[in-house]
Length: 113
Length: 108
Image 1 (spheres, one colour):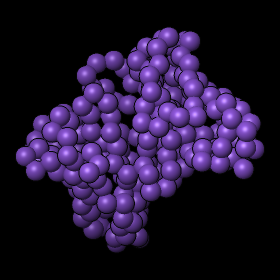
Image 2 (cartoon, each protein chain N blue to C red):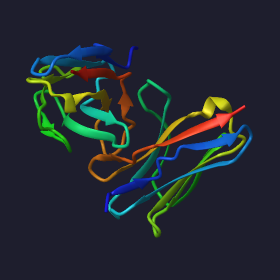
Image 3 (cartoon, rainbow over the protein chains, first blue to last red):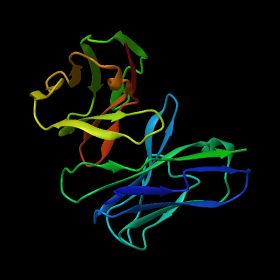
């Protein structure tokens, strides 16, 4: 049982390049989330999904797109990377219901030059 | 006013000290209150959660919620160097809202 995994662990991009971050969970969770974590800013929600085929905007969605084609995967895309998107990105998932523990992945460190 | 306020620290204590970490919040709709621990270069992991006002104890950790004051605390007794991490409070109404985290260092 791997829990929540993220690919890649590290990446360096040039301004304007695109990339996709992959999140996978093997716990059959309904809800999945993408956060970014920056010094002094804490964890900020980018996008989230409450089930396969659904996505919704979080607190800081601009410049990102997401897709949830399969229940176990949640993809985060950067179409045209900017230096302001340099951050650590965390994926999380949880089961449905009013409260259930949110499990986090190990993070992806992205640098945009 | 931000929904959740947390002093970022850093906080440095000697081994064996009692540590008190705190958050205040403004949204009275928050129902569940959590503390996450995040080691350096790792993802956050749930440490404790509470639903109602009062205390909840788990080993050396005690979570306290005061809904009337909109104030939550995490106490760590007999702190150990392995407790050195960033501690994030978090709260749920319809979504999870995090504090910015407090960096704690426990010195041997």
